[in-house]
Amino acid sequence: MRDLYRGLAVAAAVAAAAVTLVVVLPSEPDEVVAGPVTAPPAAPSSSGSTAPPSPAAGDTPVEPATRTDGATLAPGYTAMEALYADPRVPRLTGGVKRMTLSSPSRRVVEDKRTGLAVPRLPKPWKTYGAAPFSTRQVLPKTRGTSLRGMLVTCPLPIMEQESARDTALLAARWTLNHHPEGAKISWLASQPVKRGWMLVYRVTYGKHTSRAAVVIMDGGMGKPGLVFVTVPDAQRKQWRDLSRVVSGVRVLG
Image (tube, rainbow, N blue to C red; front, side, top):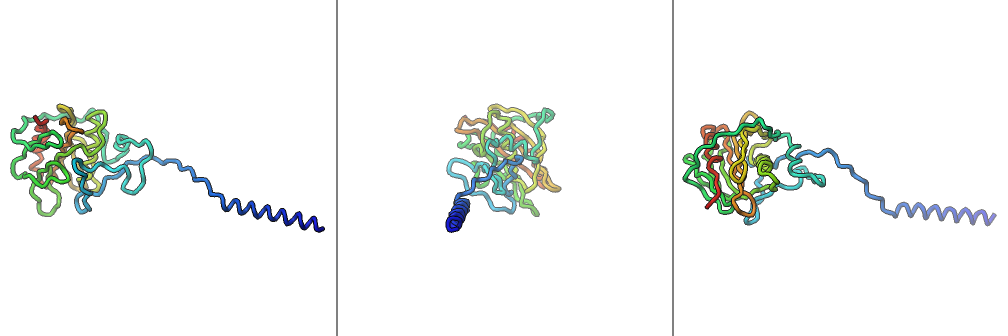
């Protein structure tokens, strides 16, 4: 009988040790299967939201690699995949027309950071504090809205792609950060320019629209330069200046 009790005690001790072992050993991390890739939404617009931090000297802010909801992008998630997944930016098809470019302006604003020059637009446009860009021209404020026309230059704020066309597409998507929340693009013109590419597009937000354009051009610096112009419908008389801008971008020298 003593041997029986002794055997039961040993078995209980072994069982207790096994339970303790299970509790002490750490569990293996769960494997997480990546869900469908979605495009990161635009950062809060410049109207009524906190401005992004100032760029480091010699450069402009680069689009973050994380979504604004805090989730990191899946490994291997490329900039072009983000573009194609973004419902705010439609595919650029062969049906998008080219536009006739006018004679370039003789009066220019020089940007030595990009190696580019852009037209110095006539009144009511005026030069304005450039930061965080390299150069900036603006239209006067319009009563009842915080939006106004803006023409800026800066080194390319997004990752350069193999083709100037793809780089311009990403740049146009980046400019939605400077339009009201919920803004969407529709293409008006697309064509190559000397040492780069230009896009002209309509930006729709609610009941209002802006006309905008980007020009990507290699000015011989460390990275291509970006020229971005946008004019809201409250200042639609200056929509004609978009043609003047895209026609007049050139390399310094």
